Length: 135
Image (cartoon, rainbow, N blue to C red; front, top):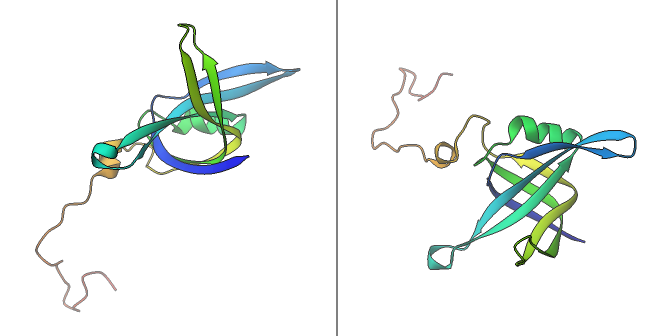
């Protein structure tokens, strides 16, 4: 088993469905995370599929949206298959309940979350006590 941690953005809203497993109805959320590597001309994007079950699927349905920055930690495997169009595909997917960490606020867009604060050349205003904050 290979455990990894990736940080990336959701490529779309999770697809949430309910599956019949034995006598139980179980919720599952599927989504893809795009993680960038390298820089300049050597920059590329790797895509990872993630499936969350039960309570984690509820969390995904409520909080995860396209463009949201998240961290995913867990076991990963590479799987190959032939698509409906006859083309071979290879995917990297997280298995066995990966851990998800939300890295941006729920209402933040990726651009707003990544935008640096504006810098000023003027020092912060100070109170009479000489501290730039309340004591």
